Image 1 (cartoon, protein in one colour):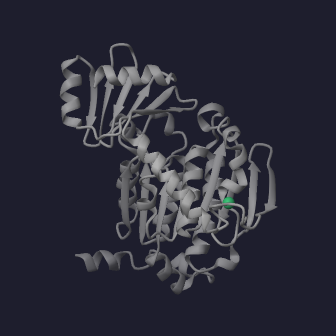
Image 2 (cartoon, protein in one colour):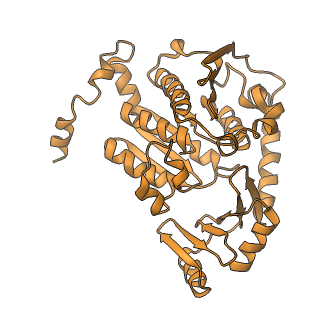
Image 3 (tube, helix red, strand yellow):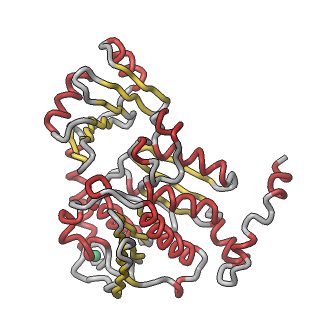
Length: 355
Ligand SMILES: [Zn+2]
């Protein structure tokens, strides 16, 4: 049975191996490669599809969100059934990707990427692809990539504009050196505040995927070593040389002092971990509340049902419409997305009332 399936798809990669720069040798390198895609929204879903169809051996997906109707305009792996079932994006994407290419080892994690889990998530991968929607997480992931000497394929889109660069430890600057100083400004324009054009996402995702395939097939010399900015609406393109690493920087500069900084950063995060914390998700009228301890979905489902809340339940989360009109989406990793408010204090109070 297994042999006949393999035979049936024997020429799956023929059009890729006929491309002289990849060939059979490049295809074998892809099969041996492992990538992490952080964020499985519009960029991430497209990146995942490219990696899985190209035959990358292991594709890890991590995303904190679930599929909503407003995602379907541009997030190419999801459909109406995923939105109605409130499926976590990582799981819905993995299900679809396994139908596309069953020979790829696809690992899906439903979690918020943070300082505690990024080292584990990125452990042993050849490349990290950026499918994220906010500057804070991008910087955290870039920092970790430079610590672990993993290339980071950055991409970002809002409106009809996008940016792309491939950052290589030991060669180029890290993301913190490139955008760190104005990262708060970068937060102003997101898909949730200024909207987003699906073809602009696909353009940037294609740029990222192409650079990833070059790196993974050993075609390092073909990498585009520039920072590319595009505007698809007015069709403007700008390219600038990527600066080299900075010895002043604790991440790309690879100075011994960097290790001390890492330790401080991790200790601070651990101390916060024991308490309830919150993040306002800009432009989404949503606050993410983190309890610092796991949530027992069965227990919570019973309690919320007893309170008369309308529930949507699957094996990954519980979604509850509460009496004041907000919605709580509860995940077993201790996170609650509170939809219908952008006020962190209000969100924390609602969570405390209902849990
Ligand atoms: Zn740097």
